[in-house]
Image 1 (cartoon, one colour):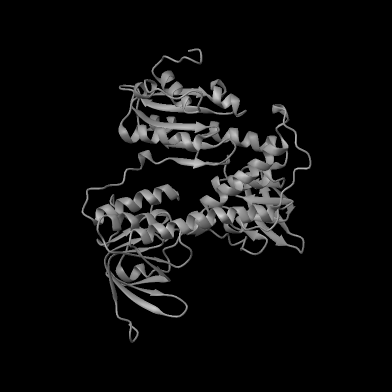
Image 2: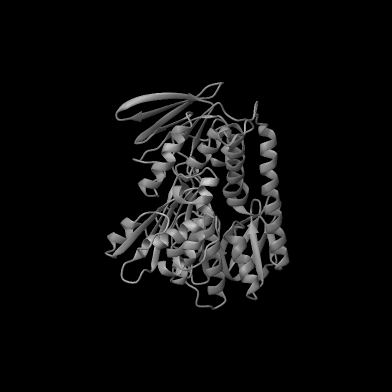
Length: 470
């Protein structure tokens, strides 16, 4: 301890102010704890600053541009539609600033102390927080680690001005003429689609059999088909990205498909092959917090680590790197510290991709339920039979509802279509609350809305569909 470094005491110390950390801090404060939150970067973490929020803003701007150019079928024709990408980036930044400022206001409003710097564990009840100029010791009764993750860097694709990760892709100063995307998961697909809508020629290299491998093939196939229909997107599956050469003009990417080596020239190459947990510079080994070989923190159902007063949430623990998962776990950890009987239950956690069309899934898929020996009914309803989807000129897609055959209990759902990201919440609630298909079918849904698709799918599940022939 440096001279004059008198420890500052707090009840609960939260490390990381992303969607997991700041939510945990607020909930802990609401439960009567004195809370300090430590953040080395900007409040809001990856999600608000260089992830979920700015990417959706960019995606929305791309949709606006695309719609402005292609609405002739509705009798709307625009000429010389242009993009001022500097203005797009300024608008995107304004969205981020509003939200990060909101987080600061929420933390202060809940009397959470905000500390800037990097935290390093000294022992199981204290950390050193360091910035460029000073170091301060904080002692705590409990700690919640919420340090998030960072993009994985491939040895053959080291990050430069032209070899970029998702953060770099969101900060481009111009719309590239051509972009190579390595990885056809949700980040690569979302950002690739956004730039394709701005007019960029996009080449997606996916190592697996399909893009969006976490979703059912009938869902990802819709996205693949729509990307190809754009005319400026090329998709290579079972592709091995081998290396990149930079030139003064851009990059040349070498890849292999079916044993044949190919090259493609582009302005940039975007690498989106997953994320790595930020657990390597916290001093966790100092206090005996157990990690897996991948650097993931081992936790129990209350987010407690192998050290009983230290908790971990978000991207640094098992499960998908989803902001809403981190927020959920943050509440569980804060409540567990307060002595409440809160436990993790992931069945009702949805996953969403803001692709074209949007994809969303929650609970069991048909294949997963069958693999566990559950007798199910898999009911399906098309967007094309919904009045609101027709009026939006967005009839591509379907909803599938998975119910338990013996009692009609909703145990899963998959949606591919416009508004899927919003519609999935009703199905998450159904799973969480133990709702049956009959309950949903008997719930009056407003007309004309996309929400009616949920009711119609439930009617299929109970054998009484109205708007499709049985």
